[in-house]
Length: 263
Image 1 (cartoon, rainbow, N blue to C red):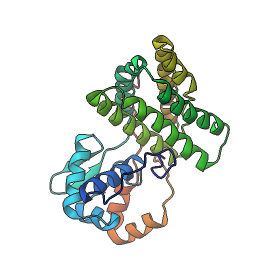
Image 2: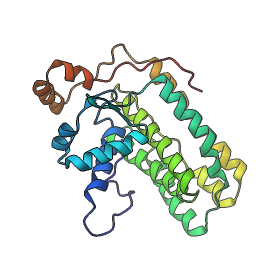
Image 3: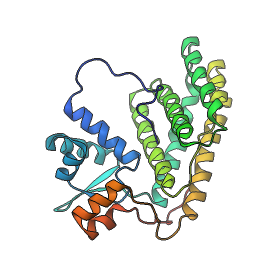
Image 4: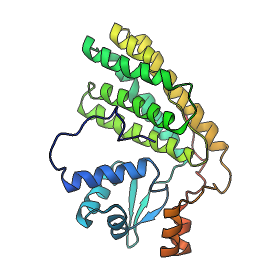
């Protein structure tokens, strides 16, 4: 659901984007948004054809995504998109609880606080709307706010946060397939606390946001039917006819494992 074409997204510098970088961005987005369904098998030639990418760029991108925990290599079979399971949800929540509170120590200069406040107010205006585009824009704005905060927290911490938030976005997109939609909490109190240098208030806001996501994911997980019935798109049907029943079954997400604590 993260809309990379959103007006909230950073503008790209002029000039052609390297093929490997473009392939990585495109495939990462496909995994996070569940365009490539959780637990689906995929091959490098299939992905290259489907997304109009070079084979070498696809291979490089998949290797990077494997390091991020989004895909896994299967010897002699190709690649598999990481499934969404109760264990994964628990790991993501624990990672966020461990790392995200560090954002409370950020000190926002007035110009940055003003920009982020404008984003939070736009988000607040969308909170009461139920249409799909409002939800897409709301999530995009929330991720832009978080990314700008993470950029101020340092390289390694920023990368950890990026990977945890990518997985959280993927979890939300997975539950979208079942008709259960996560709406991020408003961030205006968090930005106000950071602008005022109130780390304790900022930590409370961060904890509340993580708790809201945990409550949503837990409720959505245990409400899933078995098996999860996700409507096929026209593209899914075409690929099923081309690849046969076995690949079609792999392309549908399995019921997530409910093993593992979600804490």
